[in-house]
Image (cartoon, rainbow, N blue to C red; front, top):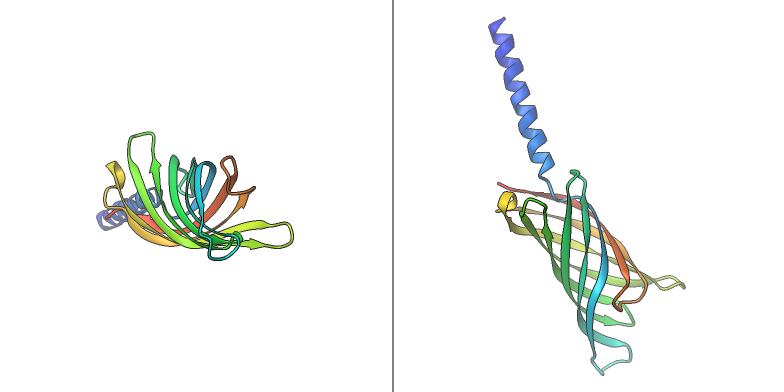
Length: 165
């Protein structure tokens, strides 16, 4: 009987540890954001070629149930709306903890309606508080609703695993 009780306690402890680490996994969810600032420069080598920097702000809804506000600063090099982009997302949680995500990908205008799709990969690059040492990686895909100008909206669905040691 004592062996069974020890086994039940050991299994129960393992389940609690797994649930706690799953609750802190920041690798999957949905980010919804608004363009708050954008600066572009026409390159001049080809019609429609521009480089620039953009800032987004919004909310991230993690699959773990956590919600954070975020600031997303990105650079881009687009010709007729298509090309590479890269940036950093800093999430801020109610308890003061932060997480940092580095990403890179492609922007593509699709279809006759001009839908703009963004997709690529990300790496969790640390954080503070309960997310100090956050590591992991994944993929993302989303869509920008409207032009790149300030006021447009973007949603990003991301999937991967990002946890602390």
